[in-house]
Image 1 (cartoon, helix red, strand yellow):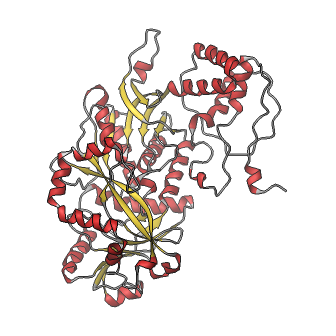
Image 2: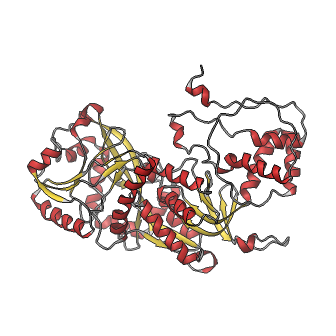
Image 3: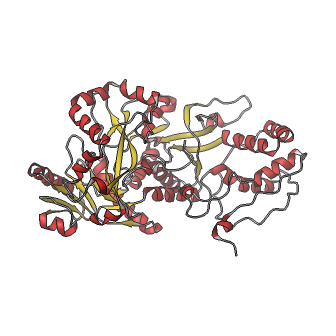
Amino acid sequence: MKTEAESWRRTWPAPPPARRSASYLLNTAFSQPQKPLQPPGNSRSLKLRAGCASFPNSISKIQGERKGKGNVTRSARPASPAPVPRRAPPSPPRRCPLPVAAHKMAALLGRRCGGAAAVALWRAQRRQRSTFDVAVVGAGIVGLAAARQLVLRHPALGFAVLEKEQQLAHHQSGHNSGVIHSGIYYTPGSLKAKLCVQGAALCYEYCDRKGIPYKQCGKLIVAVEQDEIPRLKALYERGLQNNVRGLKLIGAKEIQAKEPFCRGLMALDSPYTGIVDYRQVAQSYAEDFQEAGGTILTDFEVTGMEMAKESSSGSEDGLQYPVIVRSSKGEEVYCRHIVTCAGLYSDRLSEISGCSPEPRIVPFRGDYLVLKPEKCYMVKGNIYPVPNPRFPFLGFHFTPRMDGSVWLGPNAVLAFKREGYKLFDFSATDFLDAVLYSGLWKLVLRNLSYGLSEMYRACFLSAQVKELQKFIPEVTVNDVLRGPSGVRAQALDSDGNLVDDFVFDGGTGEIGSRILHVRNAPSPAATSSLAIADMIADEVKRRFEL
């Protein structure tokens, strides 16, 4: 009997003799996978199953189509073990044919260097000439939700997601607390208020339909000081204006009935708040997108955008697909329109496309603590402080997770790297971008004492535990461990004001008029992702007349 791991193992075909024909090398190149399939439960299985890296996974289907048309003749292949059954990949997108010169060069390289060189060249050429109607830049939860909605609304068009990492939902979407927010905090009438309430309902419905586990464990926003009670009551009124379901104010006894270890004078009870693993949600969005015919290109870091020119050979690329998107590796994607959902790099992508660099993104790192497993019984649901009106996203939270752990925090300190999850992570480019921006200095000078307090708490565990003890006095330094970190993309304007609401914009000119930028999508963007996707799809149809 084979073990589960053995049943998932792929076997490479036997290596060919030293000298083979060029046609043999090109033919066998199609059948060799890029890397073995990972067994279930492996940590690397966070990558999409069956079809995430689009081109290698679509090669066999492209090969079959060419064979049916009679364009490519196949030589006999060496016998190989029967392939492991797996889900059929989605239909390949429309692509320009491989140039004749590339066939000749691949054959030449195949003779001199072996089949691997031919494979590499073939894949590069295929990616270099990809054409789509709309390219979505960024495979976080918002980008994947938007791409999914677009392909479902316009199934006859070609769509691609371009992601610079090899995994999906790798940064903000995979480094958050996993809370499904109900929509209490946000200014009535704002996009955040509207889309969060809609998005939470859509998120629960989607998880039920797809069988994604979640817990509707509720949330208590607890006032521990008398001066917090008026702010708590104002928050209650705001939640009612935003049509948040089930809200009620409760006293100290009711707090302890819900959270036996929590102490407080008054609390706002939000039973509709929940928790979910947003990586799993994002992966499901990506699978929906691919099953509907979309393509995901990973390891594609966008570094340039420009208008294509009609070639002298009469190619229609410069007419039907007028925008060229270039990667850091020299790969090119031709498209008609672009939607960027780049999170921490939204301002840079806007700038390279010729659009406004404002608002600027300043990265803030948030460090979490975790309760030791034997102490997790002290927390049943989400416990939040009454928010500071100046910094509503700050404050130490008690957040249960889907795996049974409990996260505490986070703090918020300036990060010296946009994707710097450790204290000493540093990027000269990111650091200079931040410190040379006048808006950051205006923010710092207005809130110097608050910023210094956050830095102090980040350095000393006891200072963070002291904040937690305001809510659960039984928590001690010995009960907590340092946990993961996340980086928040905080948008600032030139006056040093935090950009509080979601921001979507485009530009002018040849390229700017073909781009929709998601400029600011912080929390609760994950909760709101399906509602944001609907809005993006509406805006794309209106702007680009799809």
